Image (cartoon, rainbow, N blue to C red; front, side, top):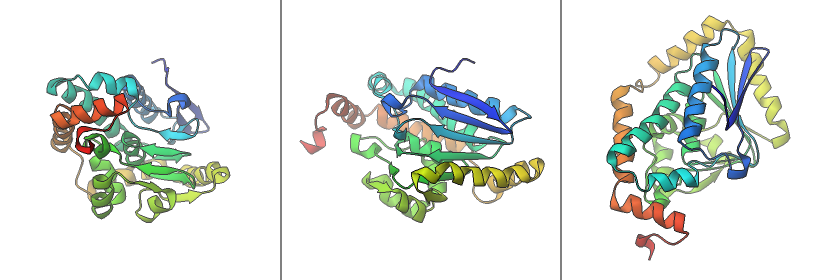
Amino acid sequence: MTHRYLTLTVNAGVATVTLTQPEIRNAFSDEVILEITEAFRVAGERPDVRAIVLAAEGTAFCAGANLNWMRRMADYDRAENLQDAGALAEMLRTIYHCPKPTIARVQGDVYAGGMGLVAACDMAVAAENAGFCLSEVKIGLVPGTIAPYVLRAMGARAGHRYFLTGERFDAAEALRIGFVHQVVAAEQLDDAVDSLLKALLVAGPDAVRTCKKLVLDVAEREINAQLIASTVEVIADIRASEEGKEGVQAFLSKRKPSWLS
């Protein structure tokens, strides 16, 4: 598969998937979602890959959905929203269940759907200047499809606050609530990721793979087809709702939504 929106490189047992649209803050579309899904599937199946790093270019890690995708979504009916949200759910499932350990290298801001990318990875290291936000409620939507992964990362208690308020929080708070594992100065980000990679690469490959599966099977309820289907329905329903359409249209038109008028 030819990649237009990311790069996939492999060096010394480490695959690096890098989002390459800094001009739009690495916001994703349906095309980007398919590329990320395929990149993790391919890297996960390669026998020469022992670990995968998810990185991004520019000042933002991922700002969620891009505007062109949102414009198309604004006119989707429920059936189209189900299909669209299903592709996002499959991307997150592929990352979360990837047989190789995964590390999110968070060099900048993470918003909305981008939070799902970070949460779906096994480990996350963030630069101290990175900001985080589950901003969906601000435009009348909900973080439905990403919810199972984000809540496993930050916990239900933090979820009650940040899902409902849409507040931006900093890297120190992301560390406090467990959303990321480590926060470092920007210039130390690569060293921190390398430290994790060194630990992974000296461990037994089969043991690492089995330990990852053990965590998924034992620590939390499995993210199964039923749970995924229910989250897909949640986001499809609200996207197709009057409030959801109004919120997106207001955002795209750069005006206040009706509930703020």
